Length: 146
Image 1 (tube, rainbow, N blue to C red):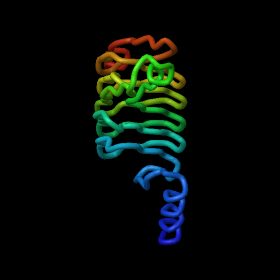
Image 2 (spheres, helix red, strand yellow; image 1 turned 135 degrees about the vertical axis):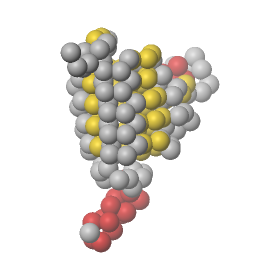
Image 3 (tube, rainbow, N blue to C red; image 1 turned 60 degrees about the vertical axis):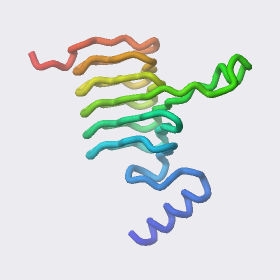
Image 4 (cartoon, rainbow, N blue to C red; image 1 turned 180 degrees about the vertical axis):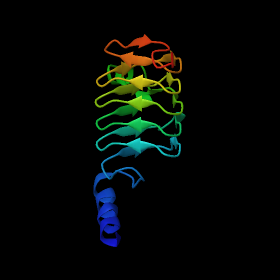
């Protein structure tokens, strides 16, 4: 394990990927609050720079997921002087499928599933929902026991 830790440290210094408890290829920016029992797959990012990003306990975030509080498009095209940043919350037991984007302002209720490839924008998603597609469609209560 010592050799692996050394390699992870070298990788972190070379790439700007902070060492984390998830995977060496998970990029965490800022200081998100990440609960216990959370899994984050490789090549995913959690950007909390300048906003509050909370990921509750027992969430499962697949590979190639972007949870990003920042939106720089207005700055890039000269309509703003700053990057817009909004808070993001994933309550407990949220599953986020591969290749999803969770944008600033998103609030996802507990025991919800975000299907692979979905783009979630600002707004509050109720617990036990299925969120699918682009634009995202919310099926509230989809996972409630019947």
